[in-house]
Image 1 (cartoon, chains in turn purple, brown):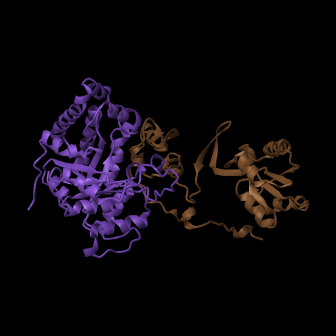
Image 2: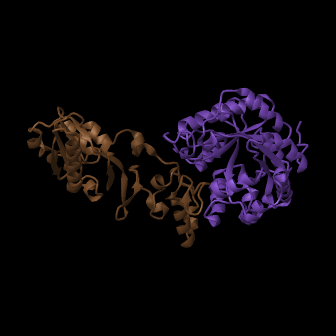
Image 3: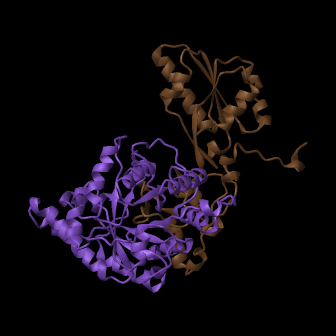
Length: 314
Length: 223
């Protein structure tokens, strides 16, 4: 499938070329130490097409996704800056979009944002001026119509040519409604979508079939989210404590069924089997690898899953 | 109605520490209905304060009076005969409008709020109240099956449930229902999903508190 190229994003080039894309994730430090960012970049550089820089995920304060993203780009990594609606109103959002593009950010992932109740500042006032679907519309309007939400014109040379991303979660409820939520994101003008961590393959297959049948995969690139289970503790935590993630008993039992020192290997093996299936699955354009605080295993998993070498463009 | 609840007794006691003459003022409006500041609650608070003073060996007089409403000047005026009796502290058991109106009408008095004003809501069952409105000033619940996502979605989302909705409850707590789960389920059950397909526009918050403190002037009623 080849589609019109709208931006200078490398991720977009990979996806538009029809090659199976791979993206990674980097969580900024809980400090102003740039070396932590630079250290994590080493594991990702050359192994994925673009890397999501999370925006104060789980509402815990970290270095801003723009600053950490720029540090990562200075190391040669293309980033996908995450932006949540929790902490910014439309004024700050539009301002940050312009600033991010001016500084070289080419991909933005639009999110509502985890509620601050989860984080380290539950006393904070939240914003939620606009929602994540409005954020897609806002970026698209700025990029394609050359306008701010106020109607103020942006001159052609100053329009942010951002490749617009969003998240999708087939595992949240109500299940039957989920594809319709994604359809709204596609209608709003999203270019690519990355899913929540997938463990329940049956449910993901059902979701993708609906998305294909509704023609959504012709309009946006769908990427499957993969987070290898490190050990039985993580499997149980994901199953019982993370809202909107389902972990079938068979996954938990598979990890539990091997000795402790082999559980990480089993988790990686399971993830690679998933990736092989995604490569064949209709409508799936790539994988999004979320190795949470396990970034140093990215080189291993991309090798095991035959995801390297990544495509290059002149 | 406005839902409120009494402040912790220690906080109220700290307001009147060292005072000899205290007046507790109730309100027969919303706070009577939600059992927070009506005649009965005034009586309970006054009794608690008297008992506490007795226990501590302090000589404190605590009087009681409940007004028809504390959000209306004509009823606030009624309190003048009490104010003339020179109280050291007046505890208002109305929503926060009450102590503000009392403070404006009687600027020399020491007026304290004895309630915390919580939200605009209704009674789900006896003794259980839930928030249903945040007074955004532009009601659109008819678009959402008669439910308000502005108030009842933790993130005020306008276009469907976020990825944290699981089993009908919100990601912030198992005690909070996901209003979008209810809205989406209702539309699906009624086969009206197409009604829901259009993207809801970005909300204009200028009619809400974000536009600054609000005021309504009804010319035909102004004398």
